[in-house]
Image (cartoon, rainbow, N blue to C red; front, side, top):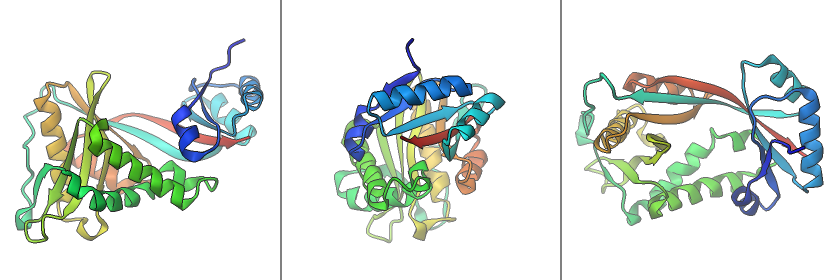
Length: 246
């Protein structure tokens, strides 16, 4: 019998341990136990499991078998149909503006990415070190700037040597726009930077003719949720994200 299980080569290589993912969102205790046995036979050390929070049996099975809840994953969406067009730049005091990131921005963007990593699920799993977590997000922004993302925008203040105050990366997947990585440097929060970046991301997606823009955030990240809600996003779905180590 085929188990709902797949190996994640990139994660395994990056973290240096065999990592897999459970490919279904619903499990009973018997099936979950069988999946764990199969994972052990495959030599996996860690499994990711994105669970349906509306199925009580799945939640109980995960808890009974020692799965560790590391994230409540919230997908938010901005549909363009029937809405006025977004503006490319959100007005902000001090002449804040948004433009396309360039290679010389990378050191600053890596610092912002490290700050973003602190709310990620990896920060709530003690098996991953702070160094690994930070390096993951540094790698993510490097790859985004090198072409993994379709667009990388930064917000800047004109009086600070054009140093990036925040970033957002955008990509097209499954027929929709996706905000993949977004963050504001701690010294520039609550100044309209996040709103300006969201407006730029929405303008980009609308310009691509996409029907909607989506973003994933964490339930613990209330500040991010408020930003997305104020910009016009609404909650599309929520899942429970577990890790288990074998």
